[in-house]
Image 1 (cartoon, rainbow, N blue to C red):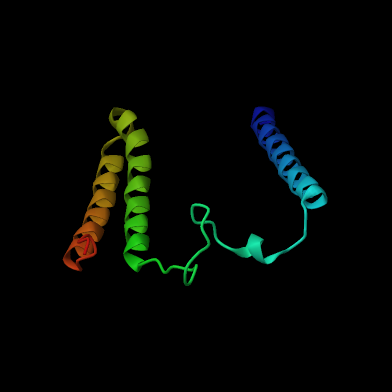
Image 2 (image 1 turned 90 degrees about the vertical axis):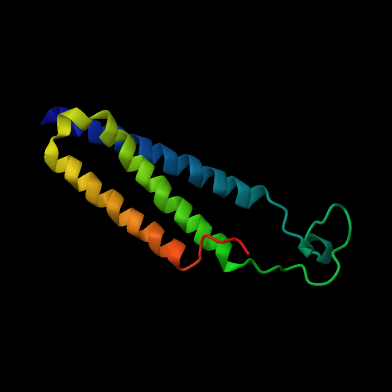
Length: 121
């Protein structure tokens, strides 16, 4: 039981050190950062030229859909690699659970394909 608490103490120490480093960096930035707002600082930078027209562009929702689909299948690979490494040791139940997981993601991919999300227009 004591060894279990030693592991948590290491995580706690790492968390406290991380919070102190980030907090210290933010505090030093707050103290040292210049705060003189001006119009040229608010302009967007376009290769050294002044922007023409609006400097805000709209991003089409397809970019977000592709990003979400990438995250879904990236998470799938994160689950698949440890499972594949321990495949022989986990048993039949874990095999069928992974098959169900892959089928659910496959149906999601099929749904996105049927809706035309994967077509770049």
